[in-house]
Length: 228
Image 1 (tube, rainbow, N blue to C red):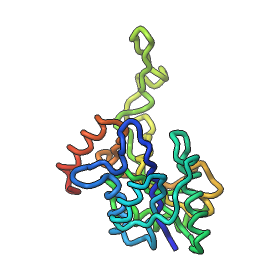
Image 2: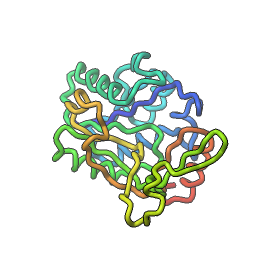
Image 3: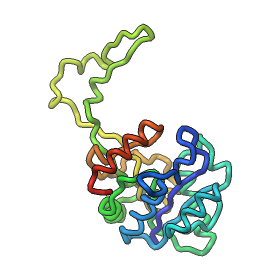
Image 4: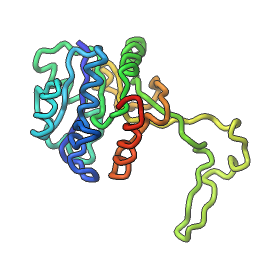
């Protein structure tokens, strides 16, 4: 079977209770669960959480929570891959025959059903690598500036300062929405970005919600988008 795993811990600090906080009338995690359901590419949608309230909300939205995430995998320092590998092992302990797995982050109101389906098609032909969404940087990273303690700036790489934009390589950033891979990849390869295949999405759908300012901006953008 092919499954989605949504890692949603309860201890968010910069935005308390972020994963179930109301976002445009719905708990934030509902957008990940609902889009996964509508994509029709998953046999089960699992939420990996250490938090009872997140568990209850997720169950009401149609996800399953067949185990509790251990606290040592729910702190501020645990990377994503071990959390997903743990969830896969827990599901296999239940007798599930797991094949492909998509990790979907819980704060993705701009997630697309089409992108999930495209990722599913792509991962089946990619051996031991990840499929994930990226967006183009809004400005050339080669012209980044660094600032001293006195407020004086200079180019991070002076040789690129006078080059034309069209002569610089296009660069991308991880949109932080989802990652498709075979279960064996999740268990053996912690390098999500090395050699993976990407789905390029519009910059306006790449919204990283880390603090209250991000949250307010995301809500305003969502309300004027065709997703609302």
